Image (cartoon, rainbow, N blue to C red; front, side, top):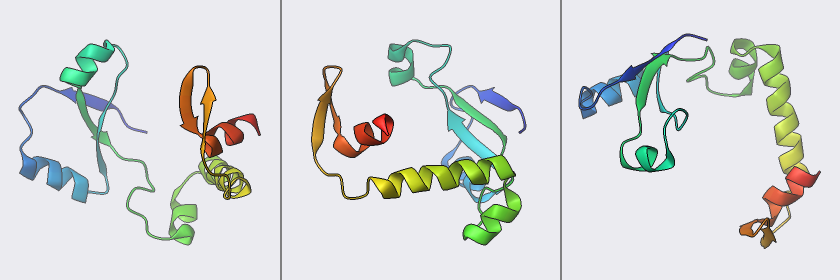
Length: 109
């Protein structure tokens, strides 16, 4: 994966953002790491960089051809776990917070 570069606001216009979104070789993201939650909430940093090889690929076959084998295997595992708990509904109190029950059951399983 390529390196990401932090952008200083307001360098990006809406037109710039849409151009990056349309370009399958580029990515635009934010990250909470290295700053406080308050700083992230008020002014999250924006990074632009190279995209992963499978960005923009349509369909499973195209994804499998473009993504590394470990990524494909990990996604297959995640899909299997999600399907296993597909019928789980409701919420559950966990560590003092309310979460979707499916999320907690997947975590336990």
